[in-house]
Structures are given as C-alpha cells and as structure tokens.
Length: 111
Image (tube, rainbow, N blue to C red; front, side):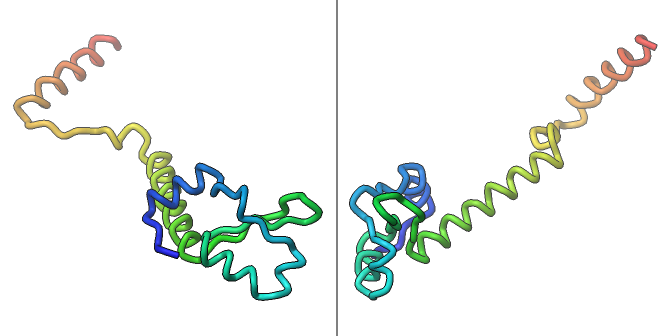
C-alpha cells in the first residue's frame, strides 16, 4: 500500500474509510490471510455476527491520524490559552500611539 499524505488520510477518516467491502470476521483473525487484505486496502472493518465491532488500520495511516490529532489539539490549546491575542497585530508607533491615546482618553473620560 502506498503511503498516504496527511490530507489523504484525513479524507479517508472523514469518509469513514469507505469500509463497505473491507470486512474481516473475528474468526478470520486467527489466520494470517487478513494481513493481505490490510496491506491492499490499508483498513479493515472487524465483523462479529454481521455487526461491526471495530476497525483495523495500517500503521502508516494511524501515524498520520495521530500526527494530525496532535496538531489539532495543540492549536486548540493555544487558542484556549491565548484567546483573542492570537489575532493581535502590531502596528507602527505612528499608527498605534494615536489609537492608544484615544483609548486611554476615552477610558479616563468615562470614569
């Protein structure tokens, strides 16, 4: 199986891995034949009595999913900690000073 890019792996997750034809029964796991199916499709749906009980994915796909999840978590934590400061933009003193002066004067006038 070819290695998926992060974007391709995310699309696979979003589409539910298109698991319609990639089934393997729990009984089949006793032999190594299911490994060929996994190598071909990169993912398998585990079935027990015609009910899905889990999913097995190729290690390369899982690594990409873990990597993307870590990046999303980091972005969420940064946004949570920094809030509105993420969008803060610096401006030259000539522009920022008059704006700050107006804010301070308005704040002083309101007291």
